[in-house]
View 1 (tube, rainbow, N blue to C red):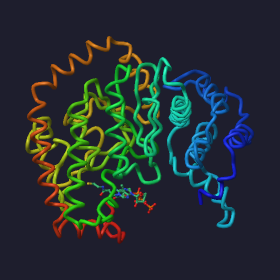
View 2: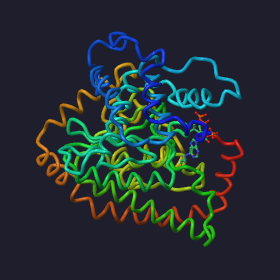
View 3: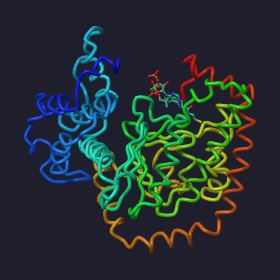
View 4: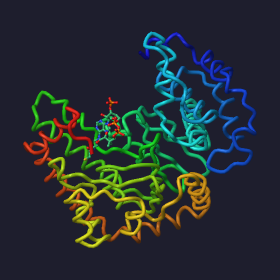
Length: 392
Ligand code: COA
């Protein structure tokens, strides 16, 4: 389908976005004051920057730009689905619809992040403020602004499930964020989910070496992925914009602060999937919640509401959905003005003593999971998901 819009040059696309009916909605119809990360002014500037792009960012990115623009200016997609044969409009409609119910404010922020990461990727290497390490990712939106590097999981149509590619990109994005000039790093999701965990398709691509090789490679990737969090040198803050599942939940014990919308839920259905906990949760969750509460979550698949997760210490604070983005981002902007080295060194004090232990826990969890992935129990559960029998 993407090839159907291949003929649209970035220039024509930019013109299309600007000239679509909603492009001329006066700014005051958005929000007259900056209530979150991206103000109307930032949004308008980002629109202008779109014209300065020299390289065609590709059809997928152009569709994302289109969808975010519509969401930011009109709101969630409520227009009728175009007919089957109206290919181009259907692809655009799908992209817009895929953003779900995210607020106009959030869409504006994501639009700004996306454009600035594209512009940053084209900027000369000597640019004073690298944006996302100057790199464009396929499955993430990464940008640096106001001393905050934001890593946004970006597969909204798949509930931000983590593919092998996304694991690798997250490792790289964390490595770049750890070294860049930002003071804090934020992880969040694009769309109505934070993340639905491991992409279960990762288990269906069997390499030449067979399932044993698949499990071994997956284990190694998971080990490196979790290690990137254990070793992350500066404050890492989770902005949990919707439901979180599996590894996206277990890793939260390695974040320094976690803010959640009231809409978020936290679910680790490992035994339901014939698997076992990862992300150091087998150690950190009982430590945080007490063994009895952690066992309900890690053994018996108990799904936590945001409030419950906050009571158990997994989440720092819960916000009403209507003010989530504005309250959280104004707080984060204030945090990012604090002295960088003081924050990083204090984090080392808080986490440093445990590092060795956490690496050992990570190794043990990966070893157990690698075995579990080869078990009949796990294979059955994954097959059931794809046969549509066992949605969580
Ligand atoms: N792996 C692979 N694909 C996933 C996925 C995952 N973890 N989570 C969501 N998706 C895909 C769905 O297959 C669907 O794809 P399709 O549009 O091609 O059919 C798409 O994302 C949208 O998900 P859908 O199931 O239609 O949305 P929903 O709101 O009804 O349900 C979930 C969302 C997360 C409850 C459901 O998708 C689910 O149970 N996912 C599996 C989660 C899981 O087991 N994760 C691993 C934990 S260890």
